Length: 94
Image (cartoon, rainbow, N blue to C red; front, side):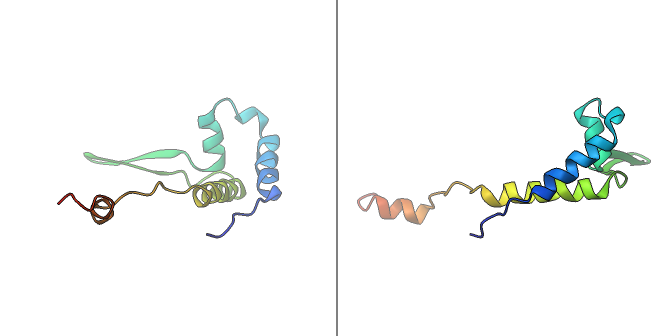
């Protein structure tokens, strides 16, 4: 597995975004809207959709994307035992 690199410029990008807009940050939802990752309702007739906000700071959005990708790459999913592996572990059971 490739080792994830830590990038200080990612944190700096988010800090700059927060520092440039302190009056817009009242909650987590406002931070999500500022970074362009908040859901936006899009309805057509009887169907309702949600899509991500296309506005916001694109550099902050890219920084959040790098953080999520690093977190996903550094966590491992637990191994599951298949039926074949369970049968090999218990040779007398059939």
